Structures are given as structure tokens and as C-alpha cells.
Length: 178
Image (tube, rainbow, N blue to C red; front, top):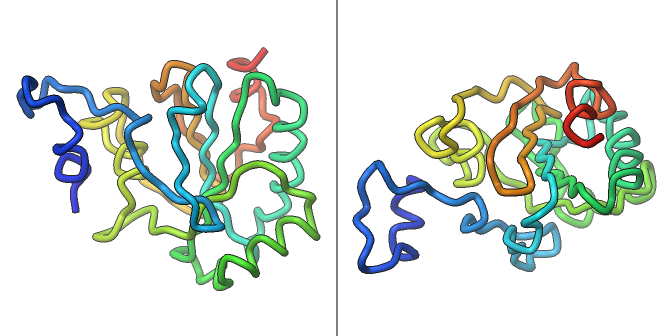
């Protein structure tokens, strides 16, 4: 289902649903790993860093740097890990497996969402917004692998995306937080 179709009922009846209407990131719905709804609106005023994560990937060690980043910039940043099993089947676990892995191995306390699809025909609306210029109004991108990162400004605008090789503590990301 397209992002427009999902959000159309949320538009005010006096608004038209033409291309000039900007789709707000904060209106997109996703669940936390425990199944509870995550209201992205609660993070308005903070930078958001969305990262598609996997527990059996060569980049999995980035969990530590992500947690360090969350700890250091907690007052102005919310990291949101988004489990995905679309790249090499590297996130095969269920919600409990993912939670335990992140907690035991990396002490992760930042938000982890439900496992979703970040590309393809069943791409979650969040990743439709992150990857398609027609929604985010900045640029289009494709998800190449696990641990690709999307940085969002405190007012909900896409700043940029970073491929997996970009470490969470890279100057490319930190320059926006400092």
C-alpha cells in the first residue's frame, strides 16, 4: 500500500490530496519491538537517526557505536533501530530474540521497532518516506544493505542518508549534532 493511501484519511477534509501536500514524517505509524505503537510525533524537536539493523551482519558491531551516540546526545537525538531480514537473511529472529541479542551483547537501550521490510513491494511506509523524494522532498535513495542510516532534523526533514560503511560517530553525522 502506498504512503499516500495510508495517510489520505489523516488529511483534513478541507485539504486536497494533490502533490503539493507534504506528507509529514510524524504521521507515519510503526510499532516498537514489543508491538506497542511508536508515535514519532513524540520525538519532534530531536534529531532522529533511523538505522535498518540485523544481528548477524558484518556491520552488527555498529550497535555499540549507536548506543554510545545515543548516550552522548540523548538530549537532542533519538536513534531508532529498524530490524530487517531482507539482506542475506541476517535478522532471522523473532522480537524476543532481537531484544535479547541487542540487550545482552550491546546494552542497547535506544528504540528498536518491529521487524519490517525496508525495500520492495512490501516496503513499510516509513521507508517509503525515507527513500522517496516525492515524500521526503529532499532526495531519493535505495537501501543497499543493513545499517544504512537516515538522519532527520528536529523539525522532521530529511538531512541525508549514509551507507553502512559510515560509522555512527562519523563526522558526516556528528557535524549536525554538535
